[in-house]
Amino acid sequence: MGANIDLGLWQQQFFFIRHGQTDWNQKKIAMGQTDIPLNERGRQEALQAASLLIHRGIKRICHSPLQRARQTAELIAGKLSLPCEVIPSLSQCNWGVMQGQSRGDEAWRTAWRRGEVEIADAETFNEFCCRVRGGLNQTLMHGEAVLIVAHGATFAAIQRVLHLADREMQNCLPLHYLPPEPGKAAWQVAELTAR
Image (cartoon, rainbow, N blue to C red; front, top):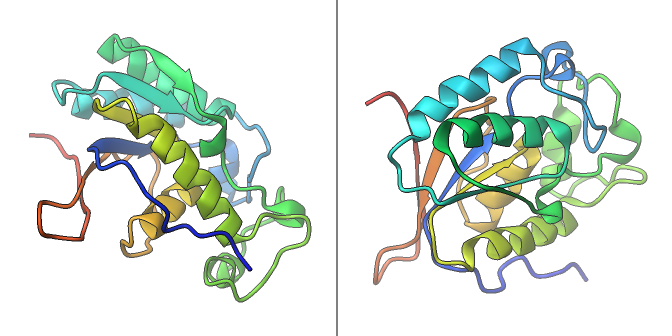
């Protein structure tokens, strides 16, 4: 029996951003937990995203330990004068034998998210969602607005945990999540764009 991803979650607003572009993103190679740095475009994306996050009330930045997320977080933190904290459970999914492989048509990722296929030596999507939920709770328990800097699959897990629609996430697009209003069950998420 799989772990329960619907266990309690702190009801606190937060911001999320996927790391900036890497060479492997550009080449459509599945990174998983392979530790790939940002490329120049990814660094520029992070700096541009920082301008959308100024004056949002963010008090701290929590990020995956992988260098593409850490570099993105540090670039944003430098512009916002905020501290950074590593949250290991926000790390990208372990893709097992798919790490370093061409992403191809990506049908395997869709099937993996639906639980229709298991990838050798990889986390199941349910296991991954449980891990990410723990990391999300760890970031939200302080009761202050936090920016989470992580990965595309981490975003997919957050969407699942919050019962929001699955979708692809582009690099360095800041999102603002708001917990359900009293009497309502649904979280709200909005893309941040220039004001």
